[in-house]
Amino acid sequence: MRLEKFTCASEDVDKLHQASIEILEKKGVELHNEKALEILKTNGARTEGKVSYISGKMVDKAFETTPSKFTIRGRDRKYDFEIGSGKTCYCVPNGPVFIKKGDEYYSSTSKDVIDFIKLAETSPTINMLSPWITTANDVSEEKQLAYQLAIMLTYSAKPVMGLTAGYEKSKFSIELIRDLYEDSDSCVALGLVSPMSPLVYDDRMLEATIAYAEENQPLFFSSAVLPGVTGPVAMAGAIALANAEVLAGIVLSQLVRPGVPVIYGNAGGSADLRYVVPSIGTPEAALVAIYTRGLADKYGVPCRAGGALSDAKKCDMQAGLEATLVMLSSVLSGQDFVLHGAGILDSYNIISYEKFLMDEEITLMCEKIRGGVSVDNDTLALDIINDVNHGAQFLMEKHTVKNMKKSLHTPKFMERGFYTKWHKAGEPLASNNALNAVEGRLAAYQQPELTAHQSALLQPYLDI
Image (cartoon, rainbow, N blue to C red):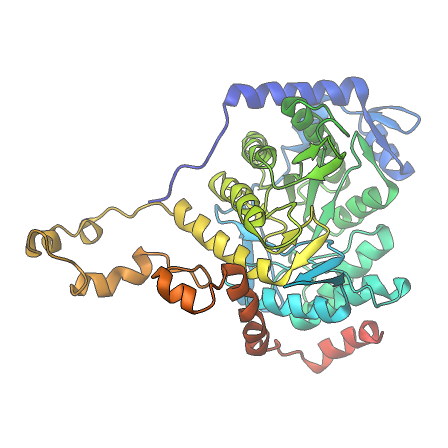
């Protein structure tokens, strides 16, 4: 049996929703795109300059057409994933520009992009990739967008996120993936749209929303309100503000194309007001995941929040504590989609090789908890209990040998066993064990085969 997911009170969800509607109707959302403003105005939104005021009725109508689930396909169809089915889709990080590898710290390069794609492709937890798993800082700016997309499609056969850098780049990424898959009907590219808190959508994000909706490709809208900085310091106000921003994007998507799949998201966490910096590995980020699930359930759509998040600068105790705190809440609240599923440090700025592997371990442990305890005749093992003498042990029982791997989680990198043996081995740490395993994982990677047609499609964008 599975554990019941973390949840929040339905009356609190209703209050948050009503507050968000009041924000949309009285304060409105600033939209830096004439086409988006016109679409909303034509469909009943009051518009003053760049501010659009969206009614509760428009929000209700939008959710009449949003699907409760959808399938995103991969280049290899065995990786197809139904989002909203009750199983969490874990995606790689999106956007870090620095690397941490043991004691090394440096700007990420195209080699790091490729290596992290290889780790993701061989990962036991990661289901989806982003073209911005990290940044190829050694590639010229004019080539970087297309390169990052093409290199991801070259080295991975799992489902992917597309580009959301304006209308043309969004269309380009969708068309390239469709041509590569030779599939014009499926959901092939997931688009990330992020409002600028408080209550602003820039031109590129609005153009991406329109482009993806026109092509019937799924979108996930994800606000990142910083309590006390870009939103109220009280979490209720911050969540209500973020909800208003996300609702505005979803309404626009459904006006462009009713029925286009959407994921309701909130990337909010906290802010350390001592330094005025984002803080993502926090209890507030864990709470956001729980309330995101509650709001998404109200609206009947899949949701995204949380991840293996940390503000730590290296893979240390802080990193493990924070990543586990937020990931456990993400998993137990039943998130349908988790961005930043492994490797994040320094508030999204760093991706770490050893933390990537450690976060896989954290995710597997969280999923183990989510799975609960199976209670049946075999697992109750009453006949075995009756057979074993008082004060004896169960080590040699066939039932133990048969069930030990599925009953007990055995970590790859954690240090257990006897202290003296560990001390004689040089007192290795779990993070060191993970770092030492990276090269083996990379060596074991096998590149998914590309046809001549697929290679020809991608090659022009790989020449850097």
